[in-house]
Length: 246
Image 1 (cartoon, rainbow, N blue to C red):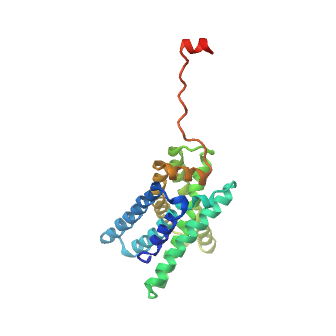
Image 2 (image 1 turned 90 degrees about the vertical axis):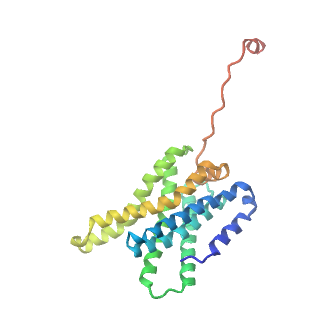
Image 3 (image 1 turned 60 degrees about the vertical axis):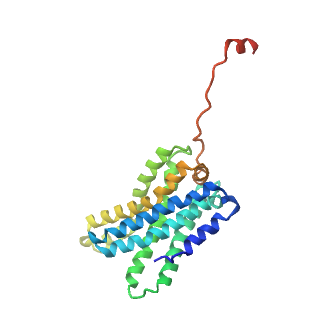
């Protein structure tokens, strides 16, 4: 549902910012390419899976890939002493830009015959746009302010599942209050798994970029307020001559 070029032209504009005028910043396209690959892989499964849910998920992937890429290029704008303020600003970027990109694509497509499907797609973008920054910031908080890539990866995966459950919890409560007999637990947990899986699949390439690329590593540490991560300096014992000199 995205316009063909508009979001990616916006990314080019962000790369033109002075702080992004470095060769390392252009590696953002590697993570974006993973988003395109995920979208293509999902659409290729239409022959074996129901096409309508696949279309809904595939339409959300590129919008969210664009918004997370924008966050990675604008990390300096969300750097704050307060972790909560940093979360709110990252939420505004990921959720706000993701939904904006999706709505622009929906308007451009001018597809009014499937309005209910468009609403579901928009809700999915909003949910994942909340889960991604919330899970990322919660994973960073659980690392106890230390940059530890493996710990951050594990905690982010766990946080993604927990946040997805919390996002769906109000719907579950409403269903239980209105008519407990109508609650389909299996479908509820499948939905939670799909939400968590999609959110982490979109975020994972950007996490990998943050681990591998020195520029984005520093931005990831800045965003999550993580310190350290550098190798400690080797302690070389003094020779007997140097000890005498001292």
